[in-house]
Amino acid sequence: RDAHRVAFNLAFEENDLNTVWSESRYGKLLEVGGGKERMTAHFNEVGWPEGYTTEESQQELVKKLHLRKTELFGKLISEGKIPLRPGVQSLADSASKKGLPIAVCSTSNEKAVAQIVTMMGPELANSIEIFAGDIVPKKKPSPDIYNLATEKLNLDPAATVVIEDSYIGLQAAKDAGMNCVVTKSTYTVDEDF
Image 1: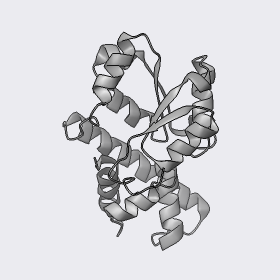
Image 2: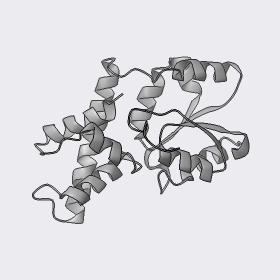
Image 3: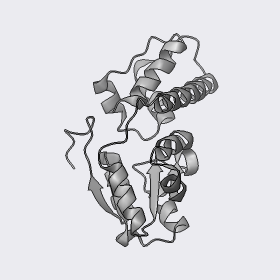
């Protein structure tokens, strides 16, 4: 449930940064699409670590931290510490058996998304299209990633169902002209959808 936040905090600790994202802080940061963008928003708000005064040095720090966060996230997956959300496997299996196309459209890094998708088994994982990370110029709440997916998969947005867990995801799906079902997470349980 908390793997991304845990991986971010481990990356901060390994780099001797006095930064720990609590559940409430991370919940607020989820209003920003993308891990690199979340870190940038956080440091812009609370101040950058000492020595990171130029935009170039700040971007390098974020890039380095995000790379390490992704490695740590993958380690948590390989150690079996991250389960799929309840219902994901059965829903994907059911859709696949009916011949429906399945795609994951995420603001997360493509490598991290692929690691999660592989948890569904090789046959199913190989049939799932992944649209993730910096594949589009603007992340959610922009509809760009959903527009790209429908274009690449030749899908009618109005006949597509998106499953989301955040307000920015819902907004992106709606702005792309798609139907959307929201499954609240611990971080979004109090959001008004």
